[in-house]
Structure formats: C-alpha cells, structure tokens
Image 1 (cartoon, rainbow, N blue to C red):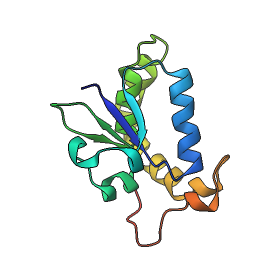
Image 2: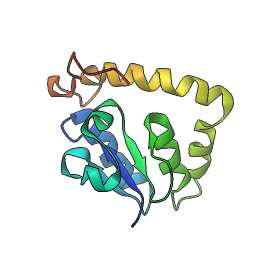
Image 3: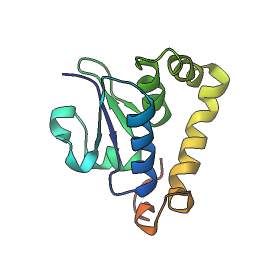
Image 4: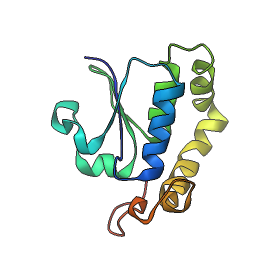
Length: 127
C-alpha cells in the first residue's frame, strides 16, 4: 500500500493545492480527498481530517499539517522538491510552520480559489 496524502475535498483552495501537487510534485503517494478515502483503513477520523491534511505511510506514525506536506515533498521522485520538504523540517522553519499553517487554514476561504464553502465550521477546532 503506497503512502496517502489526504486533504479536504470540499474546500476549493485545498483542492487547488492538491491539484498543484498532482501536476507538479511527482510522487507515488495517492492524493485523495478525505470525503472519498477509507478513513478507518488509513487510521484516520473525520475530525482529524477536518483539522489538517494528513500523510499516511503504512507502519509509520500519521503526520498532519505542515509535517504531512514536508513528508510528501521529501518522498517526491523529483530532486527539486525533496530539499523543500527537508527545509520545512529545519528547526526555525518547523517552529513557524504550524502557526502559518493554522493561519492559512483559518482564512482559506479568503485565499485565491477559496469560496465560502472552504470556511471551517465555527465548532471545529482550528488547526
């Protein structure tokens, strides 16, 4: 079973980002919206997927948010993307990655490609 990168398929901004990954980042990972994924088989919950993107590799801990993005980039078949993924894990960058990810997640409905449907529900814990 290959790695799986799970994103919010109801969010236009997230979907555009996933399409970018599919087109530009050569990877063996399956990139799938959580709404079409077999979440129990992946060891995920709906709540976890609403909070952040997820990267699942069988036999390894599940990674979320910027850690998931970094892992996907590090696993790329392209030598150009692997260092970008590695840079996301550097101490200073990694420290800032989660706050930046949370900021983007909170405002994704206002970003290019975003729509009102992208807004996180008010009762959902913010990533």
